[in-house]
Length: 122
Image (cartoon, rainbow, N blue to C red; front, side):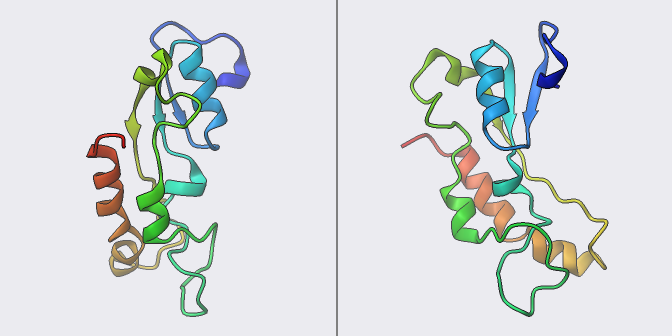
């Protein structure tokens, strides 16, 4: 959406291609939901082991999710920080065989993301 030129007033940006777009949007006065693929796409693997089914994407462990910061350091403590509304997890199910696989991909990482999102900044 940022590549198309000026955004309409009131536009909220979903920053899924990393942090850069979210930072630019917040600095331009737009609200942002931080959901960078490298951190919070839960269809990506939880482990690098050979027993991981359908190995797509980056390996993002439970520890990685706990270390995710929805407010990037470039915005922390600035006036633009208020534009970061929060975060969201993403789970594309076209590569999941069944509900058991979806549950495996999402939990416990979704609980970790909820704790990150609802906890105050350090």
